[in-house]
Length: 507
Image (cartoon, rainbow, N blue to C red):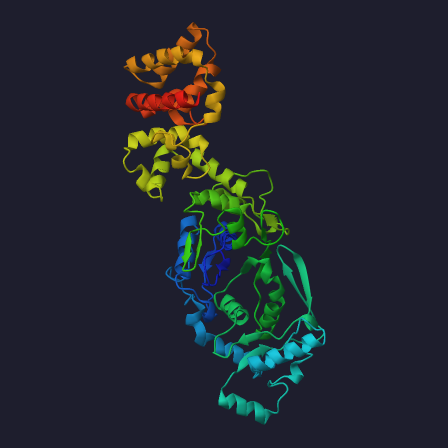
């Protein structure tokens, strides 16, 4: 049995960003590659930022992608509870151990006092105030106050936080699987709060305690946490625990490469940055699922944003990703979020699916009502015609709307350019061929109309564009005769009449 135990530990403060999904995916792939365990832990110590429904959203998103945890809230496991808010009582003993060993201390400074010191430092030109070894002795804490004063303040029990006591003049070094050897100077670090006044641990304490108690072997997370890892490495040392292996993932950059991908980039460029649609009161964000993406296609796209299997292979099933995955193939540099590439992946996945599978997806999509009047036989043929002409599932309806109803608009520019009045006699003759065709199959229609064009020494370019626009409104689309067969004779003749009536008005 593998001893690989990894965790994805999001905070329920809103919708899960697509970068978080990639973090979960890499954790999942490593667990499956090594026969290990993938854990979901909800880090909800910051109750002020807690958002109702966010945890359910996270779980639904992971399950949509097929990245299901082995342990976690709602999944069971022997290392629970898996919500940090339900583990509150566990943390106090570890805080006390660090205080008793001299590696942490009680601080009694109020927010007003801290704000005043920050302002004073700004006036001196110091715009990056740190509560550290330099200012510790000037603040109200158990390292600077007499024992009697400290005991009195502890007895009163008001506004007590606990801070980590960072040692002076040390170089803190750890090995990161992605970045190699990383070092921080302790004199540059602040004495981070590890227990808040309300008795809740901060991320920093809860993180290392939970990782230790849940026997986490690898911490795979975004590079924004790299700067905090020095504090975490110190806490592992203070507690006498073996630290897990660290791997800090590169950023997913916005499409221009100028910084981290954020929700405002999605709003600006019109693409989703969240897996599922989020309706959060004042803010609603689009989701990959609702925008018509295939979950496996998004997983494939995300996997390659920061990881390279070592060749030019792009299309991979989840099983292939598991087989090829390794942390040492994760790159250091950020990866641009290329939405066109995401759509390309989705297009490839749609083309690889059966018409029946696609129909099942469409029936459960937001467009289900638009196709409810059509039987499965019609829909399967329509899907077959459109399958190679769509990027996302809604395209079957929007790009192929002419399969379901009269054209909403016509390519008048091409009609004016291509239509010649002297050819009307031929269009009338072709109309008769269509009206009298009893088979009305693509093969029959193609044979008769092409023979007529050839026999009358016409060019296909003079006839086909007009027929296509009259029937569909556009020059784009599937095979003309296959489309006619699907639409059926009655509807083709209705469209013919409407289309040539339009031509009379614009020609």
